[in-house]
Length: 241
Image (cartoon, rainbow, N blue to C red; front, side, top):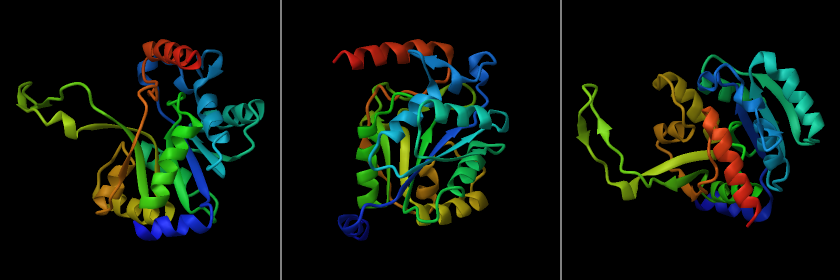
């Protein structure tokens, strides 16, 4: 941890952002959620704007479906995303899509921030807080304490046990890592894990510590039609504060 902190004192790390927007949107009734408007601005464009306006981010790579590559490029031009380096096709799984994005960042990248394109309400200051923790610790994720009681269930439908809620956190994005460590851990994960939906999982699989940066509850992920309405209500409330 100390080495990461000392390095960040002398120079600003080069932080590359990989925005993953290659999902199937199966719960959106056939509509591609990343292009749906939230208060007039497409979901993925809001994510792009947050990273564009974050002073700690040096460049942006977007991973999307092959059929959507050109549309993402056009959104980048429309919303003046000057940090957009490239748009690349995703893979068959989220893990493969993330790998495609990570391998497309600049060679001078020190850290990589991985973000769900379907989290449009993240703010530049959220990204910066997570980035600064990652610069200190090598890896950090935005996370919020779980407020519901969680039940661990068996396949037969019965409760097996109830974990202690005070130790549970819901992981968000961005998740930010030292890129060299992350690449090594990623290759190991592809050998040892069947799949993963959370990028810090591969850091943990490599026996690395990940810092939990306090997140905000408005940083929701759009997964179903009602989430658009929730996001617009959150946006309206946040902007009126």
